[in-house]
Image 1 (tube, rainbow, N blue to C red):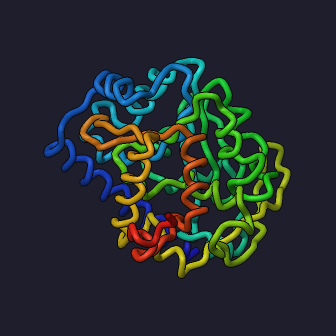
Image 2: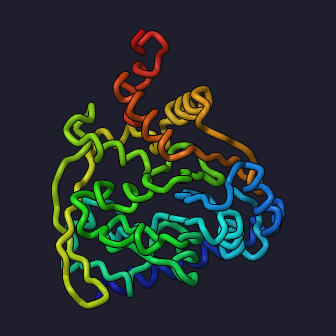
Length: 307
């Protein structure tokens, strides 16, 4: 009972803060139309038939007239009827994987559980034609002609990002692109595909514990799904940690110099994309040289790279 009251209060405060933030953005930020977003996406290099895995900051795009729905419509127009759009729809009621795994009686049900990923993924989940993968912590939402294929069977994959997951299937798409709208190269979960692909061959021990979390599907069948929590010490030096601007800038420069990262403005936000096959291949190459999303400042020194 007490937990329910706390959750209601927390939800009300979050909604109030969002309203205040939206009002401030409306007053102070550049106003962006849906058509401008379409033109900017096309200029960036998003094309008909693309399959894009999106990470975004809605606020960074400016004040978008029409809100999250306009951003989604612009993306749909840009990739067209033969394309696909994927967004992370993660749900972590404990705040972290480890804490979520400790919750009593937690059972993920996509019919009642939303996402903690922000307004754009929330709106996307409610959009027509969007499918959602069944996973207790890292579900993925998809729209497009291959949405069923991209999301089906996630709960039966051996790991979050492994064989049969939306990430692995995304990699199969002929025009797969990782797209960042208004964000740095920090909050990009595509990086973890390399960890699951290499397994024990990954240079660092990134996982701490193995868990089993329950999910319930549309037929009310309960599935026990494997989830691994991350090494807390390594997480503090990872590319998405607030202190690691050096690593984010290093990766941005690295992928630009390799010719894989294309950057530009979408709305008011600095944005970019990388073809998924090039992204994973270059991550593997960097890993073989000792550079990962956990690299410390000493490893980023030019003298530290193999000759």
